[in-house]
Length: 184
Length: 174
Image 1 (cartoon, rainbow over the protein chains, first blue to last red):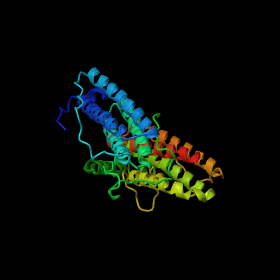
Image 2 (cartoon, rainbow over the protein chains, first blue to last red):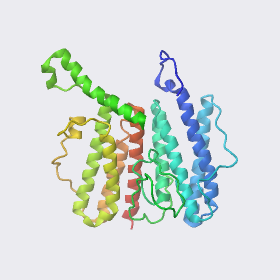
Image 3 (cartoon, chains in turn green, yellow):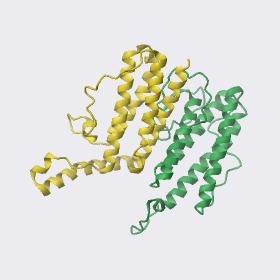
Image 4 (cartoon, rainbow over the protein chains, first blue to last red):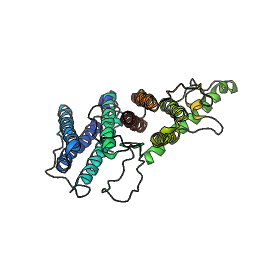
């Protein structure tokens, strides 16, 4: 946090200008990472899971474009996507691909929670919607829900690794197909 | 988390010192009418009311359709986590109820009017799905009025409830 002159207090929407740009950049970085990650995950999935991955991949591209436009409108230079991203674990099969998709959505939900911490009500509302959308996708991949999506994000773990950590996962009876809902 | 703790303390100090300051100015008579709480406190109170009501819905459904316990208990446990996290943002005087303190208008949760819940599993799941969706929306009703860290907590709880609704919707079609 950089110190700002206490006297400069203008309209709420402008008050967190630099903070808004930083939060939008963080969300964009998460979307860039998700676009890359779904490309990797999709290659190891088949059937309805692959279809869900493709759907989410497209949704993250759209979100990336929307954030890029918002940053440009604020006169900021949108963060560029990296050519490649380090994955949290090796992805060689379907189980690892599903785990990766879960991690990607967890990270996206955490990034959008940054927008909810701003004072601009429009950005707060946009952030809250995006947190829910990512949480829905994450829950569908995970097969269970979290108590605090975006806030208490479980540490990424390779599928089959011992279950531990502060993830507050529930295990409701499996909802049939794990295909993420892309609406909402 | 340190920031959360600080905020909680600030809220708590505000809640404690405001009545004293008012009482100091107006004499003992002023103690009879509690002053209006700080905005953050009112928003937490509303969120607690929403969460408490949702937990009551779960309780009523579990009583009516015990066969759903395996499906519902993990979700209910997360609502208790929501409630605990919200209550932790308030200082609750010993012996009082959080809902009474936070939202004076709300009916006490001690003896709620019995909720009429559907008796079949499919209908009960749909009933709870609707309740979760309603709660997810209600938790965002005062998003703009909340301090930043509380707004984030409310958005997270709302998102969690949206995922509950999705699971209940899927379970209904089994």
